[in-house]
Amino acid sequence: MERVITEIIRLAKSCDCGNHHNGIPIETILVGNYVLREAAVYLERKAFKKAVIIADEHTFRVAGADLTKYLSATKVRYSTCLLKPDKNNDVVADEKSLVQALLDTSQDTDVIIAVGSGTIHDIARFTSSKMKIPFISVPTAPSVDGFTSMGAPLIVRGIKQTFQMMAPIAVFADLHVLRNAPKEMIAAGFGDMLAKYTSLTDWKFGNLTVGEPYCPLVAKITREALDICVEKADKIADADEEGIRILIEALIKSGLAMLLFGQSHPASGGEHHLSHYWEMEFLRQNRPQVLHGAKVGVAVSLLADVYERDFIQLISEFTKLEDSIKTTEDESIVKNIKENIQEIRVLYGAIPKASQLSELIEQVGGETMPGQLGIDDDLVVRSLSEAHQLRDRFTALKFLNEVVKVSHQVKVRN
Ligand SMILES: [Zn+2]
Image 1 (tube, rainbow, N blue to C red):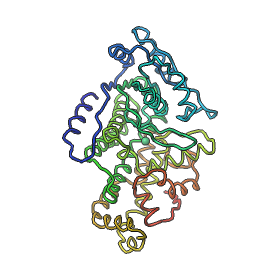
Image 2 (image 1 turned 90 degrees about the vertical axis):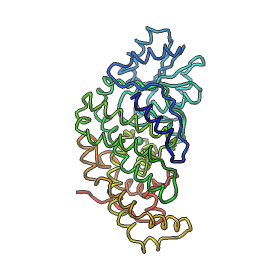
Image 3 (image 1 turned 30 degrees about the vertical axis):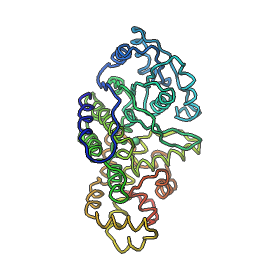
Image 4 (image 1 turned 45 degrees about the vertical axis):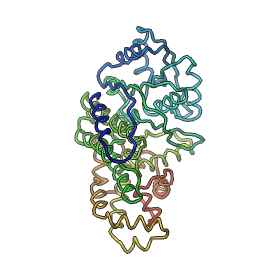
């Protein structure tokens, strides 16, 4: 992985996309068996004096405990913050967890170690950013692509919002730990990668139609990470060492791409907006949370279906498009669509069919239909017409709702 970082930094230097590229503050990314000892060695070498391990009961057991054993053999002192679950037994990145992490991080702490999956990383990222001390990432499941990015989706007063905080300075991904992660977390990580089919497409669409910032290099890095996951889906399904290495490296790469770009455009499009909408609805109803990647995996085939059925057809009917123009903004969007019609058709035409996406997710053991996650038809329809409002980003889903105003229905797939 070290070579990947050097290569990304080299390419970013000569990138002429016109956007500012962030430097990559990550010094080390180690993916391998039993790398937790290396994490302790790294902390000692960096002369850190006092670490806090942020984990929950489960992630502490699978990785934190070993880490403390190795830390005890060094001069680095440590304490532990065990995040408490909510009444549904979920650890959530909300006010309660954030305050707990801040209180458990004493003033003499000079480094934070996040031991866990996405949510624990978001809490650690927040704490690290507010306390102005670096953090180290120890993922315990290959379940999301956020480990190496700066963004922390936090739930504040019931609303989920992503804040740009900070990236870790080092990542220690222990394959032995990751391989033993629950099957559904592996499937979720795979779902978060498949989401790139629609996110990358929506990103380019936003660029062509409303001039959203775009970088071909960042898109290419993300695309390569997606392609290898699809190519090696059988290995990932086996959850053997090779498969898990492929998945975690792809997730890390996708995170690095976001880090380089400074925003989540490459990795998050209409499918992520649907997932955020569902998550907020679950929070409102006090229902237990569903894994981010599981929701995103279901959302990507749902959206692929909507795009194939409504969008591809619609953009080819110029008179209909022109009839829907209400504002000068609409006018310029329609003009840009007409000018780039070939490219947009090719872009959206290249998204695999919903059935193919579902097959891939099934292969890795994930759920494919909203109903399987407890998301009913009413919520699906509402999210299709409202989820685009959650983010200020121009996607084909936003276009369908705001420019042409299609009405969404749930179509039973067969
Ligand atoms: Zn995601």
